[in-house]
Image (cartoon, rainbow, N blue to C red; front, side, top):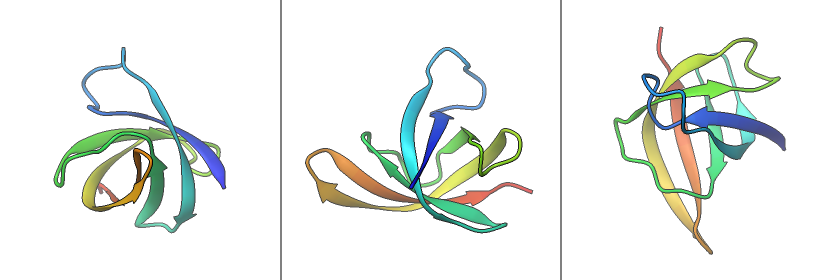
Length: 77
């Protein structure tokens, strides 16, 4: 898994969180995160896998236990 940095809101650069990319495609990524996110929330994603920072929308999430979440993100066009 590849490490990723993300900001819960693309309009605030002060809060940067870390997670892992489980899988990815041109249209989005599956993120493993330590924080719950809200469906429809927009976040800013930055990783080696993602060539430059991209905005993404939370489309779904699943609690995995131990405060860990699997989150489906769709890149904004």
